[in-house]
Amino acid sequence: MISDRKLEHLLICKNYDVEFKNKTTGFEDIELIHNALPEIDKNEIDLSTSVFSKKLDSPLFITAITGGHPDAMEINKQLSIAAENNNIALGVGSQRAACEHPHLADTYSVVRKNAPDCLLVGNIGAPQLNLANKAVEILDADILAIHLNPLQESIQPEGDLDARGYLDSILKITDAVDIPIMAKETGCGISAQTALQLVDAGVDYIDIEGAGGTSWAAVETYRAEDKYFGELFWDWGIPTAVSTVEVTNTVDIPVISSGGIRSGLEAAKAIALGADAVGMALPFLKKSISQEYLNEFIWKFNESLRIAMFLVGASNIEELKQSKTIITGKTRDWLNQREINTTNF
View (cartoon, rainbow, N blue to C red):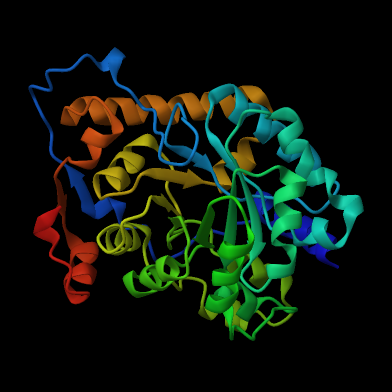
């Protein structure tokens, strides 16, 4: 059943409209300050980052996409080759299927086989303490992500609706596993309060995965016989720009901004708001039919990020993080109501 569900998720994401309808990421409300005298050489701008245990050539993460079904193997192979060749990070989908059904392990292990030096991020659910070390072993992971998906579980026909003890389980996973732990949402964002709880539980990194990109309520709506609840909660969540500010303004650990980011310009805005890296999933899934498409997409991302950095006068990622922004519209209203001073950015 798990394997079949993984295939359904893949097919739905590739062939149907699964993005938010009426809620955006909020990055349209973020403006970078143009610098007419940047005083840097665009060709020497350094996109690299070293805050995630390995030096990466770009702050781009291919965030969790797939695994757990034979048809996922080729997708993960293509993604891993592209990640290795471009020295960017790659995450896999939930590894529960492989941990419980060993014959599916190669749909994940194919990643390390084709990306021996890549920064790889494993993936389990918060209550799956018993699977943590197995997941790390299957992938030879550098980081283990713990995904948080209460909305998806609420809409999913076979969803797990008992979220009691998640924090305690996360704390035990951080103690049981020898590699860094990342907490990640799945499209609804993370608030300042939740971020503090996660840091107290021992996580090393946070991937906010905010609202505005793929809606997992939407994905599960296509699977459900009764569409009412999925359609009602299709646009639920904290916009990515808002969540980025809340979390980076609250905790002192590296943060990935993801959820609807589609270009290097939006990535530059996220980093200027305090993120250390950015993630994308759906665009990579749709480009995974060939290395040509993947490499072109990564090049365009990096080049648009580099242009944005040139236009604000930032020669590296740390300087971009210090760039000032203007926050307007709904994003400013949201942050003000959350008592976050938008003039600090």
